[in-house]
Length: 238
Image 1 (cartoon, rainbow, N blue to C red):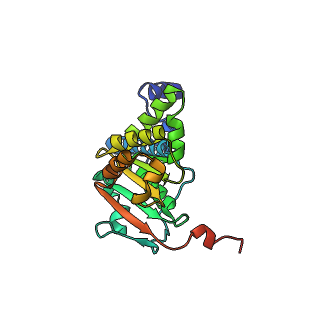
Image 2: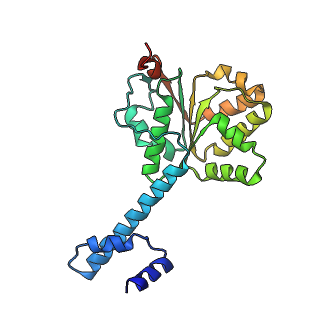
Image 3: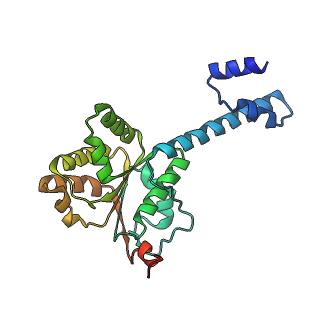
């Protein structure tokens, strides 16, 4: 009988943990048993999807909002901590620009928000800007197509270390294409220590810079990070 159950399980594409799930169900009627089984299978599928999306997001490390120190952030009027953590900005296709010195917690917050979005069933994709451009410049057209598909399917795109390294003209154009594709279709979280007026310094093209800034700041909130580098403050080397 177990073999037949497993055969139908595969045919109907049910969870491969079905045989472990159903013996744990207590029910007084067939209908109650069926309902609890279906709910358990759905929860199992959602958990597997969450783990898969977390793995595919590209995070270098996984971060959490638990005990995150917001004291060094200046919030805009329309984006306070509670509103930020609700992730309403993703539903509204709004962007976040996390601006401040190196080591002040920008990447931590960006990743933690991305992880929370995944826990809510959304898709997040994370790239350091220079790594993204390197992948888009790959001679393997299938690899480039996979990157575009990954971004296209995401609800939230995180672009980390914006402006840390200069781009050549083609790299800047690729970045413009990505930002334009995401404009009003998904949310972007951008971390940077470069003010808008100096973006031309790494994008080089003045018109391209203006076009990127225009698309990013529309429907956008800026969070200002202050204080010294957390890593330097807590360094073992004194």
